Amino acid sequence: MTDIAVTGVAGPALEGELEPTLPAVLVRRARDTPDALALRKKTLGRWKPYSWSDYARRTAAVASGLEKLGVGPGDRVAVLSENRPGWVFVDLAVQALGGVTVGVYPTSPPAELEYLLNHCGAKVLVAEDEEQVDKFVEIRDRVPSVEKVVVLDPRGIRTMSTDGQLLTFAALNALGEDATLDDLDRRAAAVDPASAAIIVYTSGTTGPAKGAMLSHANLTAAAVAAREQFAVDGRSEVLSYLPLCHVAERLISVMGALGSGYVVNFGEGGDAFAGELREVQPTFFLGVPRVWEKMMASVEIRMADATWLKRAVYRHFTKRGAKLGAKRRRGGLGFGGSISYAIGWVLLYRPLRQKLGLLRIKDALSGAAPIAPQVLEFFWSLGVPVREGYGQTENTAQATLTPEGDVRIGKVGRPVPGSEIRIADDGEILTRGPGTFMGYYADPDATASTLDADGWLHTGDVGDLDADGYLTISDRKKDIIITAGGKNISPSEIENRLKVSPYVREAIVIGDRRKYLSALIGIELDTVANWAQQRRLVFTTYEDLSSKPEVVDLVREWVDEVNRDLAQVETIKAFRLLRKELDQEDGEITATAKVKRTAVAAEFSDVIESMYEGAS
Image (cartoon, rainbow, N blue to C red; front, side, top):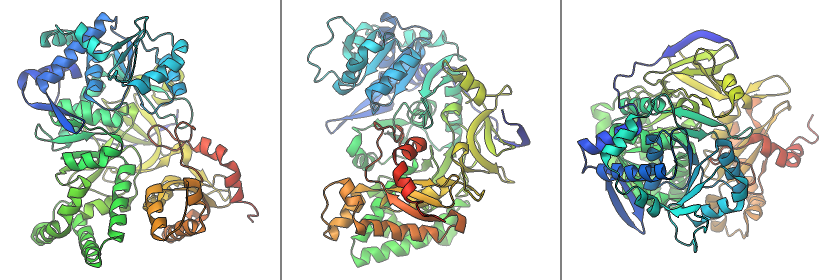
């Protein structure tokens, strides 16, 4: 373990409290506001509502049904599904039984599913549909722990298993149809808050995924902290779209929703996301950097094709909005600023925000990965108050958040209520608080190397604290590049600058032990294809498009522009365009679209070496 520095900062104490488990919180919601809206699910274009009593009743039935299948305290139940109400019914039902919910990314290939099911020893698998069941069938003989498979949507599955291993979600509900709210309350009351509630598998960028165990106490503490930091209540709404097996979406769609009572909308997902965002117009929205980047790119591309008048209005009010955004980040617009913003609201901000689905936003958050300052400044120029948060699976996404009245772009805020931050002697960020995880499932060595005897979580990130307790993150400790000249360089900052372009999707900076930096760049297919079509460039595939000299020149112009704002040692001296999109099944990216640097470096080693041939 690294020695811990003395300097650090603590957040305010947690002021509120909730019931000891999330199922107990659900019971209270159902009793206090039984008819209030809790969830919506869009199916075939129509939104189906669920009240808090519906939510609790369905959870009670699933808990009773799972108990009759033999699920009890400590048993693991895996969920392999896109976001939907059934996902959270199962999650809370398992927790109410004292079991442990294990989320699996629905994009996981069969080999990864096999590893996760065997590693956690899942007793029951809840699969969404035929596609997910087929993955299980392929590996069925190699996952002996799975006794039952519950299918949420059995359409397309011609025959269920003759040995009784598969059953429908409707059949599971029928097993527990007599369960009452009192039954759910009784089961929840018997659960030890200090026991494991969920296992969240990390993205595994440097090796096999590890299962972080989060307790019931971790989850309820996170719910309280979220309630104290955001202006959310029963009138607020969110759109659930990031995978629920990721801790960030679990925080928004389950913990935060139960703690604050807001409405969670489940759309049909996929390509429908942008339209559903416009339809729901949430008041609270969490976007990972990729989402914010793509929104910004869509606006820039649309404006490039707009009339000269629209472009002039856009340029004027975004420039004016940038100045207003700087004032807003410091606490307020003032009278003159409010008048200026009102004019911009009519002519630009309102129509543009409505098209993006951000018209009603009161709280917006960027997290899960670093984001370029230019992207945040763009949304602030439209009046969308995007704050940065920092956290990990291992601390229930509870580390820091930018305060509402003092937003400092480039910094990820101060410690959240109940949490502490310290910087180790080597620059590593350490956190401690009620969200700190229990450890990694069946991996005591990894736990010991991450969680020390004093309860400090060693995050693996490098950063520093300023005099006001604001945290700045430099990069992942393992990703810091040390050039042949001995210079330490943070690749993520350069990569984020490169990805600001609407034409760039991926950027991987290379340079460890090299004489200069280079980059592998992946183009954004949609926007580059549109650019090429406007110039009558004929292409067939992604590889064909990325090999066009005109496209290489397009990216080169952007790389040169980024280089102008970088120190000489940080500039990109050479780059190559990737001839394929990075893919999870090929082991190049994780389910959360994080690049597996080692795998990419190995796969494209010949391309990388070509950027250094003849270097002096």
